[in-house]
Length: 102
Image (cartoon, helix red, strand yellow):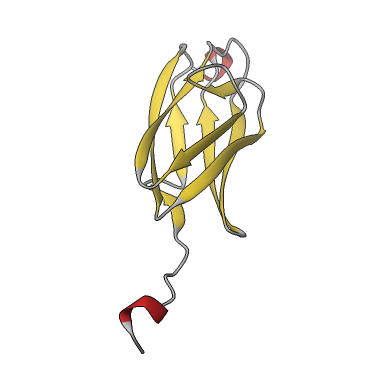
């Protein structure tokens, strides 16, 4: 097989599968691992967004993506970010502690 005929495996994922956040507002830098273009979408949990306030982000290759969240005055809550590249997916689950849980 010649070098140009090789098929590259599609890779998509993140450094962590589950992230726990404190109840205060803040940001979290998610490290995405991808060997090409990908889409990241908040599929559950409207309290979590990307740095620009959007629920969807498009990126390319390995990179750091900033997630933003507000204070949680209730009980713990969950959000899911789905990473997608060429039909492959991976999920990162975000759990934010609540003030009531403290």
